[in-house]
Image (cartoon, rainbow over all chains, first blue to last red; front, side, top):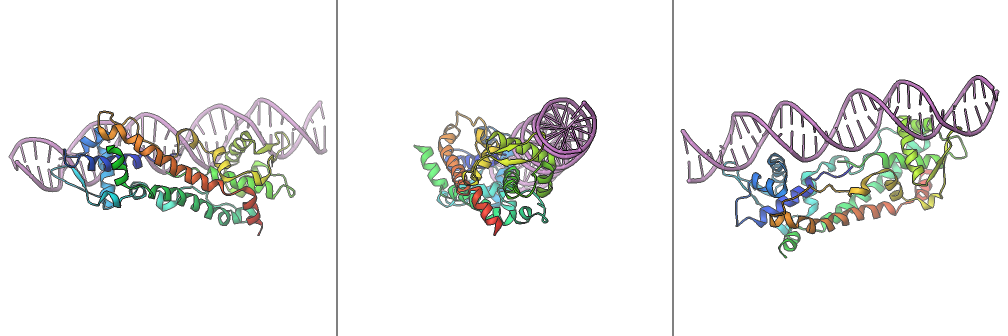
Length: 140
Length: 140
DNA sequence: GTCGTTGTAATCGATAAGGTTACAACAAAA
DNA sequence: TTTTGTTGTAACCTTATCGATTACAACGAC
């Protein structure tokens, strides 16, 4: 199954917040229209990004703003902020293989390291891009 | 969301088929008990592996066997055989960002390459392990 | 106090996974 | 030829997650 679009939506949101910071107020409605999803979906993700310490959200008056320099935020940070993959890992392992079977008994020992490595490779790749780089490309 | 356990189940199946090839008949019931899932789930995956050309399944008499040398099958091959990530990519991109917004208009240009790279990094890691290696480790 | 906005709950439909039952098609042994 | 064990496949169920949507109280600025 695919990884939730929260990653791309959150990245889109962060880029928009920074891109429009001197131009207009980036409310959930404004962002929703740029991303083209429901404002409530935006707000939920804004809260996740806020909880991760990346942004501030102005409660009464509205709008969001970056709290950290874009060069200090990687796509991996965003990924971790909005996805719930951390807890259980990227790959879903079948529960309780038969410990009475020589294969079932050792399948975890044999596979776990490889799965972790594959996940780490993906995350390492995400970590190599910062928001600042994306912003620079966006403005070209 | 997590990647389906079909990957770990299929790998378990292939290892068991090879491990028990001279010891007993690897029927879907036998494999189901080692993996600890329903036999129908096993059969569905067996068909996917067969369609990928990795195994043969004996219809009337029962049992499955490898059709390719374990050194020629990588975890990426298994991943591709049982998962449907290929078509749409690992990451789900939000549909139809607003093309009238300067951010929405360019978000795909800016992100697509990075997402592909992250996916490729993960797949490259999976490709570095063969079934033969896993088998060798299993028998230690 | 009004107004626009956020935080949050509740509910919905869609999608996918895995579990389970059931049974026809099939191949080999009796 | 009949029996037996197994596969291929359909059908249906439950659960989980996603994103859409409505609704509204809490909040801050004017």
